[in-house]
Image (cartoon, rainbow, N blue to C red; front, side, top):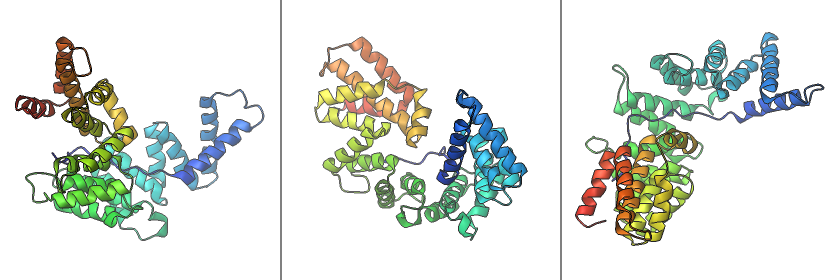
Length: 350
């Protein structure tokens, strides 16, 4: 089945390499200063914070964002938010980070309206200083309208802003928006259900480096969803996505191996993937930018197929008691996936 878009999708963040480079330079200078050789990393960071605060006191406006970003990376969210708040009227990057933090409730209570207002100001700005922020701001507006709060939920507005963010597949636009559109158009039972569009946007996103969409394309080729069924293309997409850390691709690849009677490969990858636990999901999501929902589904698939290997003695010594443990784990991670695979087992397709 196609990867449908869940309500819980993440904010698009932006990297700020120029600012990070400035912070790194100040850090190196602080570490190389006479008498600082024996200081710990924490003590050096405190000195960097002090240097940036002195710059703010001296009237250097760019230091607000630099110090705010340093606090943000340290997860000192209240201090970061305060600096972004002070600078948001004269610095678009501070306004962007202020909006992200307000919408997601980092260092403050969730305030979606403030978050959306900040993103709207960026999305509608014409200054050359804001152009690098516009695609992400548009994506975040699309996300906000899709998730909705109060009377704001609107699939039509979500689609409009996501399409603007995706910019016809431009690699310099929001690749996250391109991938999300692939899932947006995969939703059954909605007027937006259009699998050809879903395939198009996942193709664009995958071509621009999206790991999530690479796995999604593998599934679409595997089952002939929105495109002619092509097992070779499916295998290439799933294998490469799995290699890059896409757990949903791993689960589908394990199932593909099993159905192809490649039991050794199914057991090896199935066992490896089945060792992941609940606490691993948010960490993997942060590292890969893949949705937690589909990471959990991938683990559920791997657990079920590994259990099948244990029951059937495929490349393993039969162990039905241990298999029960993995069946239970599959159900725990995703009851629907577990039930679907059980149904396939009963009807002989697995």
